[in-house]
Image (cartoon, rainbow, N blue to C red; front, top):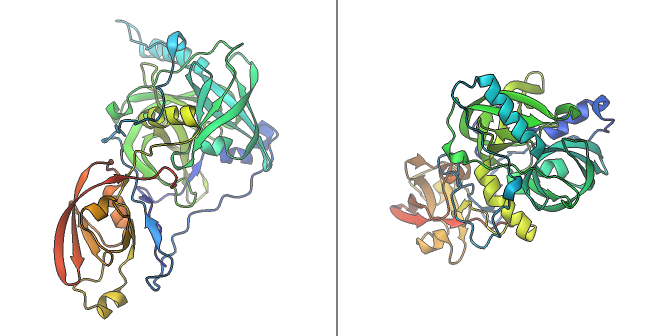
Length: 410
C-alpha cells in the first residue's frame, strides 16, 4: 500500500522517546502509575492497486535551523506579552568568570520554569513548562499534558496552582497551559532567536527530571537541524536542536537557554540506546525557540494552530511500482507517482498531473515518496523548487512554488 508522507525524515537510526513518559520507570519519585506502552511507528511498505490506500502527500516541515521558520504569522494572533516580568538578558561584565556568568543565567531563568503535575486516566506524570507570557501562559510539550484530566503548576517558591489547557499543536509536540496570574509573581522567559545558534555554543537545561524539581545541567549545542521521530505514528519533529546537556524524564517542556539567559529551545526528546533500551547519555533534543514564537501566539489567540508554516507540494502520491512501470512501458522503475493534485494547489498551478512520476527535486534524486518528503522537509511555504518528472516516456521540468500545509493535518 502507498505510504502516507508527512515529512518522515529520520536523520539518525536510533529510536527516540519523549522524555516525560520515561518517568514511569521511576515510580518512587512521585508515586506515579505506569502508562500503556507507546506504539512505535510502522513503516511497512507494500504494492497494491493505485486505487488502494492513497494517502495525502503532505510534504511538510519548512524551517530547519537554516531556514529558522521565519514565515510571517498571518493573522495568527498577538505577539507574546512579556512586559516588565521578562527575565533580563545577562551580559558578562569584564572579569566575570564562566562560573559567575552561569550562576547569573540560572538565577534569572529558574523563576520562569515550572513543574507540571498531570493526572490522567492512565496515571500521574510530571513534566516541565516555561512561562512565556505575563498573562499566565506556559509553554510545554503536548506529550506532557496530553489526555490530562487535571494539571497543576508548581513554581520555584513552591506555590502550586491549578492550570488549564489552552491549546495544543500535536505536530510540533507543543502545548500551552494557563494559570491565573492574579495572585502570582510571574517571571517571564525571554525568547532568543534560534536561527542564530551555533554548534559548540554553551547552553543550560532546566527542568524537573524524575520529579527532582529545578534541576540545572549544562552542555553545548551538539548539532542543529535534526529531523527526529518521537515514536508516534507519522510524526516528525524537524530542525530540532541536539544538545549534550543532560536531560531526563520529567525535563520535557523545560528550558534550554543560552549564556545570555534567553530561552532558545524546549527539551522534548532523548535518544534511546538500542542495545539497552535506556536513554543515551548526552543525546537530547529540543524544539527551537523560533518555532515556539511561531506556534505559541496562535495557541494563545485561538486555542489551535491557524498557520502551520510548513511547506506542502499538495499532491497525493505513492511509490512507483516496478510492475506498474513495466506494464506502462515507462523508462524508469523508481520515483514518486502522483495520484491526484489539490485543485489550485502548488503542484496543480505548476502543471503537474495525475500519473506524473517525480524523479528529482532541485538536486535531490526522488526514488519514492519518502525521499520526496526529505527533499522539501526544510523548505518554507512560498519557496520555489525545480521538479523533474516523467509523463509517460517524456521527461519534463517544472518550477513549483510550494504551498502551506493545512494545520489540520498532523
